[in-house]
Image (tube, rainbow, N blue to C red; front, side, top):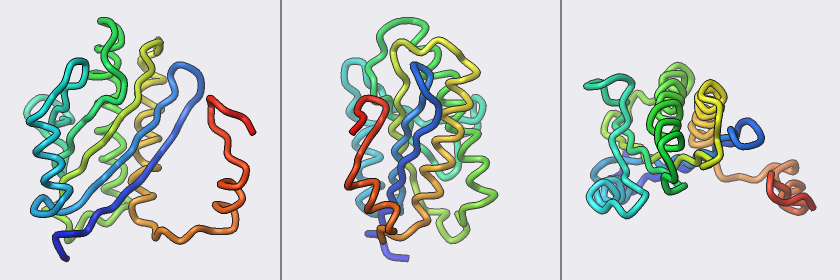
Length: 166
């Protein structure tokens, strides 16, 4: 496998303030994704402190996964839901992905997971479940080619999302 491989995926799960939006970028640590991974870890900014995601203290996700919060931490509850339930959801999603996504032959990969947790989120179980499901969807997308199906093209022609209905 060449060092310039970059796989990209996106997943969205849930609704309302506890919905999750996950963007995944993965590739070899010796390539551009590895450079981005190390750079992001080394350059935190106010409200955004990327960290190595863990399944439990001392047990990092495999492949090594960088958790990047897309929303600046606004209060204690938001921080707890981001670092707790959303990180655990990411771990559970990565665990599920190991069963369905062929990580074999990709032991040298690193993963960047950009995670959205709404500052108004208020339900730990929903945040966990939605981040797990969005992670699984994003990882699944990484295994797909960039070819757009007829349904994909139709969706692009009539876009909508939780903030915009066309």
